[in-house]
Image (cartoon, rainbow, N blue to C red; front, side, top):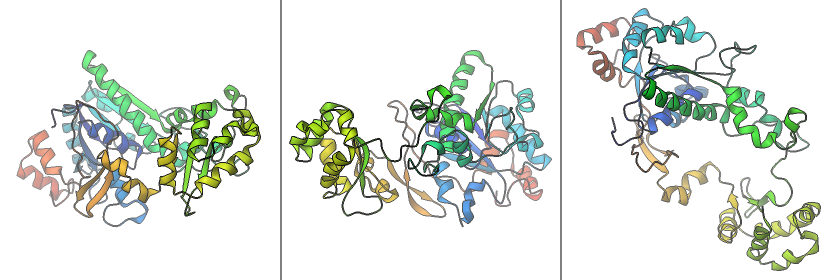
Length: 402
């Protein structure tokens, strides 16, 4: 345990899988909580083999750093009994199984609360625990579709489009981590645990509010798709050498920024051009305005354009692809890109913890191998000795290697 971390002392039993739950528990682990991930022997979290990956998928590695793994067969009575014996030593229980799964295992909130009244029980479901859609299964894209994200993404005259970032999953996980932490703080005052529930559909709507404010008329209208921009002042501009991601995005929000832009591209006279005098005029003459700016951006790389324009006070960003992201000199200078040694992949690059607390220190650790901490955790938590571990192995409750 890292005593210098914000959540030192919090212990989490993590039965979550894929991304929505693991993203929540990873944030807690990054803040210093002791997260013990309970997985099925043999297969483990389905995220380990996502889309047929051999070894351990990068997807799993990216969402499960700083955790310990215990392999425990919860379909066997002995496995469930081990989990229930562990339960009182933990503050938080997290699950995001499909509807009805946790109930079949007998590990629903009411059952666990009876054994551990101070437990913070967090469940993440596609549509929550009640309501007409509560029995429906969900993944990230389903949450985004039903929360309206597809409807505001894509070209104005094109079909709805799936957003790239997995906000339906990890965006829900972020909110779950906040809710769990709030419940933990409340328990420190009251000594009482509680149920924390997140609906992925509801969580995703949190990221929709700015778009809903543009054209939805408080639910009376339909917010439009805006493509990559809204006129020349908020738009994507092509850069050299013309590759699929060679673009820079500009946000010219004020008259001062427009003047700064004109000077930065060597065209200060455009600031006095009547066609572009004011936001409305620039929008009305959008094609001409866009052409003037694009003539300059096409002669610069996206990173050069960003350096010049941002340096002149114009908010802008190069469109980093995934290779750019890991090589980004700014992220590397901040220590955000880290290399971790994994037992299967060797040393691989990870993006770091975005939560920077001056008084909390947690070193990032690679995601665990399946069940690699089973013996360690059961010995420490339950005082189980070699004889009982051997019996559990023989019964198939824990892996043979543990």
